[in-house]
Image (cartoon, rainbow, N blue to C red):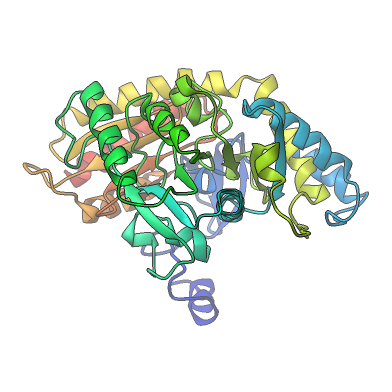
Length: 427
């Protein structure tokens, strides 16, 4: 046990989660690889929780941050800020939301918190619809709408939260239905729920549930929900903190798989846009964004150095078609892992899109989640030189694979080979 780990435990909260029995200190990275304090190299298939989106030590981002640091780091939103305006213009245009306004925060948690403030103020209601198995952040309000017991430490909340079916396709009471029947059953459940409550402010939903284990509904579910919600003026908030910026390969935003009824009223973003710099934010229709009747600021949201990182990172992402790379390389990786899974009784499902892949583990011969196996595979993958994540609903039994979007075919094969060994050694 390292001296740093002892110091960590002595000064930081007990509930601050760490991976691995012998926790890692990562000291530097390059491309899709990172190194620990002992000089060991790892292929990074988790990217700081889907945050190192393009590459470690990306020269374009490093240069932009360095040059901005030499001018001014920060001024707050009380002053005009050219990099913030430029990034907001780009994001508003890319969002698909008409007449969009953008507000920058420092994290996805804060972005979702802001979206809830806007929705409840605009609608004059503190009732919120959320999905079962969801995760939306760590703040008091975000915890209150998180439908995942492992990440919700209190039932106290400023909001009344009602949970809806649909975020998990292959478990729950509708799992055996066909996709059209599944969507119809979830819509019927939503209609029934709305018949028993005052009209809520909004539905907040992750197009693909992140902490929940990369689960998702059939395409079009949230479009069908939106038709029902619009009848009562209920807003739709797409939580794109993990799904945004082309990670799913097929779409730039996760909501676009459910876009038949139009874009969401709001979307929240964070993580990958800064490639490690602390950027989050909300995009909303102007009438919603402008509904607050008191002054506000953001001391660190939109600060110049993070905006410089975001602009450089977004430019690189678009110029190098990393969405297309996620689709191509992610598709190969998913098929490779499905081939492995077909031979192992402990792998229930390989799911996902692009470079957002979940591998759900169960006790062989059963349909019971196996969180111990997930931890064992996590450790074995690390020993083999691969970093992955984990998540899941009732039990943390899904491996989460989310490399930087610049992953090469050779690196995908390298990671799949290491993961295959880790799975076979476990099962």
